[in-house]
Length: 303
Image (cartoon, rainbow, N blue to C red):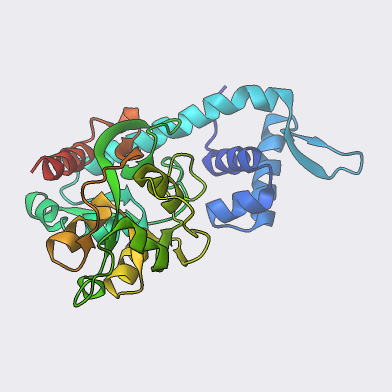
């Protein structure tokens, strides 16, 4: 039996089954829900069998049939191989696009100030930065490589530790000038604390409560203060003299070196349980542009 070209219908079926929704599948595929439904029906007509269970009224409930469930892993593997094949074809061209996923804060405070050296080494490679706050699907969104902050465990991705991180209080030099403020830990009680909520739901993310406990300072009113869900904005608030921020060392490095921030209480060390990892799909690890960017990241950290 000759296999027909039903790639769009297969993609619509796979996305509908994964999301359990025509609407969500349509959003991913950038078409209308009606178009997704029609593609699925076209595939069912050609196969001669339903792919989703139907209620008595004929309305589709997006629960795959047993046969469809059995076929989905092979269909997904097939799309992965097709995507990889296209990526290899793109690699053969002189000009190529490398899609990199990072958080907005990491892009602003670490990657963008350093990326000129990658462009100099690989002038024919255009870098597309995806700074979505939510984890992205590397296959469906055609992401090549990324840097993620966490515990190193992301299903379906290889993760190599790039940088560990220390956490410590920082403030603007103007907050220290001409006064005896912040010379002791006790003085934190009367200061505005700036809280980083960017990873607030992630187990192990350092907070003011955990840092103060490590420092041995109890009964500080940490429920109050300024709360921001972006690490770069947290540092900017501290630079502007809005209070004392609990900084992540990787993010704060350039601001400390430039004198825009001052580290407080350097004798207190607090290593984060989380770290920065380079992440990518194993089957793409040999792609030249991906390997070049991965090697460049590690060389920058080493230097």
